[in-house]
Structures are given as structure tokens and as C-alpha cells.
Amino acid sequence: MTVPHPSAAPGPGAAGSKAGGRTSRRRPPRAWLGALPLLVFAGLCFGLPAGALLYGALTRTDPVAGTTEITGEHLARSLRGPYLTSLTGSVELSALTAGLATVLGVLIAQAVVTSRRGALRGAVLTASGVLANFGGIPLAFAFVATLGISGVVTEIGHLDALGWNLYSFTGLTVIYLYFLIPLMVLVVVPALDGLRPQWREAALNTGATTWQFWRHVGLPVLAPSLLGGFVLLFGSAFAAHATAAALVGGSVPLVTLKIADALSGNVLVGQENVALALSLDMIVIAGLVMAVYLPLQRRSSRWLR
Image (cartoon, rainbow, N blue to C red):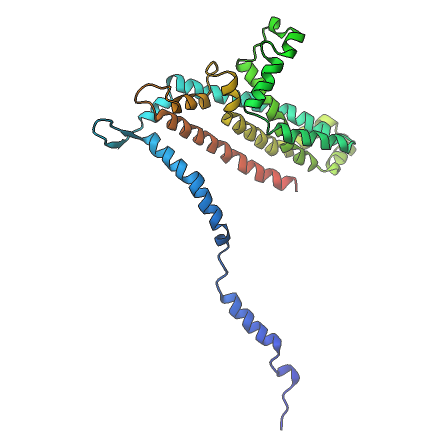
């Protein structure tokens, strides 16, 4: 009588391998099902309004016959005359304020990162988080009380004699910097923290100066983050409305103010849908901005891990 060797007997490992084989052949559960509620919510809150906006911008209804036809008249009208002026005005204001806020924000963030006082870093980051989200009517009122025609700082410094005017393009630039600079500080501080001290030490040990380190090492590594921060600031300034509406009204041509006028009925007959066309223009510009911002963020994250 032959007794089978213990190693030849099927053990729990064999059964486990069979079960594992059956498990591996099963189709894994669909991971996207967990995100289905979020997708439905995003579709209802963003998809439907975007679809209605696109439909209104590309269609025209005959008030007599009641028929609707597809037309590009609204889009063409939104790209000429005062509408084009307001669109370019918003782009110019956003580009100028984003550029200034990028430079000033980087300088402040570098001073915070290199500081040896942890309390200073915490205070600056906390204040930046508050100021970056401070806008609208309260921000406009605060600047009117301080830098307006009868503002405290205006009277103390006699700024009116120097030609200062808060209710102008320059005044809007100063106000936008108030919340864009803190936003840039919040964006660029993690990138500055990602610069390894070993890189600076290696550059200094090889005889490089501080300027050469920043020119050949620091700025090339930070360039994607800086450009991404600039794009983010541009989008924030481009979409701002309440502060400009409360401060300058229609004296400074901005696309958000033109949209508000059109939605309130302050347009010629037959041009009601121009506001939808202007909104579509803003969506296209914002989409281009995000198309530039996201790849830059991925590239910077690879360098700063």
C-alpha cells in the first residue's frame, strides 16, 4: 500500500490559488460608480446651464412668427464695437494685475519661506487665506472709505493733488492686487518649499553666485508653478464682477459689467442674447486658461516631489 507524500496532497494553498484564479477572472467593480452622484450633480448644476447658454447664444427667435433658427449673429456682435472693447478691457486688466501680483507674491512668499520665525509664516499664510477670499461689495466699500475722494488716506496724503482716482482703471488695478497678491502667496509657497537646500549648497560649492543659482536652477524649476499661478490669477481677475460693479459702474469697460447690463435689459431691442454670447466668450477664454494651467501644474509637481 502506497502512502502519498505529504507534499503531493492538495493543501489550502492549492484551493486558495484556484479561488484566486477564479477571483482574478472576475470583472472588477466599476470604480466610477462611486463618483456617479457627483457626476450627476455636476451635470445638473453646470451642464444644463452651459447647454442653455450655448443654445441662447447660437439661436434667434422671430417675435412675429415664433420660429427659432440657428445664427451666429450674437457671437459676431459680441466681438465688435463696445462689446469687444469691454472684452479686451477685461483681458488687459486681468493680465496686468496677474503679472504684478505674480512678481509681488513671489517676493513675499520667498521672504516668508526663508524666515526663521514660524509665527511670521503662520501669520502671513493665515492673513493670505483671509484676504484672498475677501471681495465684492465689502472690499469696494473699504477702499472707498480709505482711498476714495473723501477717504482717510486720500485726505492725509493729499492724493487728489497727485491725480489719484480710485474710480478708474488704475484704481481697479490696486483693488484687484489686494486679493490677488495673497492668492499668489498661497500658490507659490509650497513650490518654494519644494526647492531642496542641497541644490543651493551644490551650486554654492561649485562657485555659483546666488543670482546664478536662481537663473540656472531655481527659476527653471519654479517656472511651471509661476506660470500656473499667473494663469490662476488671470482667471480670478477676469471673472471678478461685484467689486468693479460697485466701484466704477460703466466708466471702465469690462465684459462682466456688459453682461450685467444686458441681463438687466439695458440693451437695444433684439440684442438680449448678446449677454449669452459674451458669457460664451468668457467660457472659451477660461477654458483656454485652464488648458494652460493644468499641464503646468503636472509638470511642476514632477520636479517638486
